[in-house]
Length: 592
Image (cartoon, rainbow, N blue to C red; front, side, top):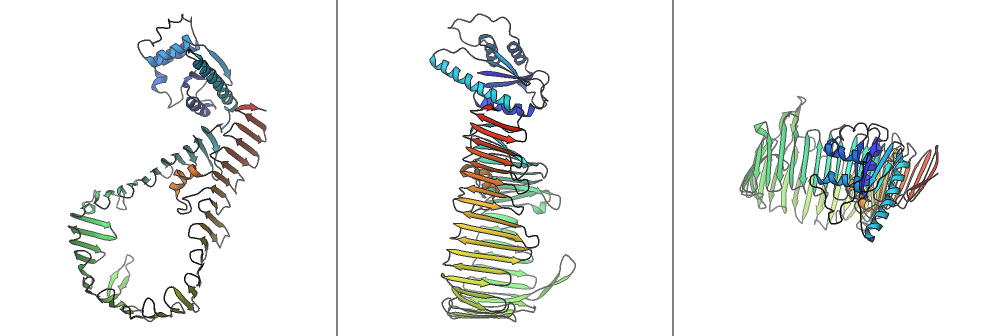
């Protein structure tokens, strides 16, 4: 069936809804094309609209001439030439015509001649469906929200200013929130764009493929193994990276000193990678040289043999047999032109970790000497802390912490521990119970890991978390002690997750198999939550707006201080009330 929609003026108030109606008609299988009586809208003057064949065909539909006699049944082929527009002309000359003006719309409907009982039934059903759709369009032409079963649903956002369109249940949606726009086909991909902040995100089968861009900086990766990254640095120079982890690393820049290439295990040079400022290697692990600040380490058959040098530092090791390293006290000037002292140390080990003897913090007010001979004893001595262990790990440990003001006994540590003092109190018998408190921290658990409670209280933050069996149940409360505002999030895996923000807004989602493990993960919320969320409930504390949705809008309720809207069976039954009055829709037919 072919439908031509003629609009009085492309710039009229109904123009925005016109695009929605066009998409809807096409989704039902109708060949719907636009025809503007006056002027085409900017950006929509496509090749079809500008085509002389198309204008001629539309003209024949709107102003039909003498209808020619039907061709013999044996010759039902299309005329030679442009079959697309010949088909359009055939609709106008061989079919029938029904036009009715509704507000500022006019529809011209043409139908092919069909034979057989199946064709009659299809034509009858198409006419009935077309009538219902056209009637719905007529009654909603001035409305900003539409509902056409699970195929299409529009509604305003509850927790933020914006609009959302869903189609095919949870399988497609588009959302606009202030300057941000989002398109998604869960769980396959999603794309987010914020032109105001120049920010974009793209996920494909997250976390398989992701792309993030902020300004000129970007990062693209596949499973964190194959990645591309780049952008403008602080030196106003563009830098691009390519990584095929762990085999190939590359960086290119306009500054030659920033370039590097590494092909593992053969040969390579890296900068600011693998937690080092610089790395050079040949036939890894045969030879690796690394640098961190001023300390250079040459590894031979990494990590067993190395020699180390730096500012006041020398060392070597043949691990795990023996090794020694010594550093004297040095000074350096920081970025504020102040002189900083770098502490010295002396370290020696034999048959690590059975015996080692080391002194750290040389040149400071708290030098620490530690000597270990496992499993006989371990001893640590410093001005701020003394600790002695015998027959570790099953023996006894005694610690006196003069800085934090407590005394600790453990036997064996850390399974059975008792701390007493002004700075800390602990009673622990693993796995039965534990209670540990300091001035800012609190940690309690019973029958670990059945019940666990943690608290951080450091103004202006007061954060509490209660967990049962790790992630089976989790309850987090974060409170601003200065303003009194609080955030709360509760997760009961895999049944639900509910969150109340600092402004009092609430959101509930029923069925949450991944959200408790990855809270506040935007990719999970965009790509997967719409698929399995059977019930969604939101309430905006500022505006008073609220919404509830069951099974992808099978039932939906939207409420505001002065309006209510209910939708049942994907919009087959609708009720709406506002200051303007009440309206009903049954099977998409309006009443009232």
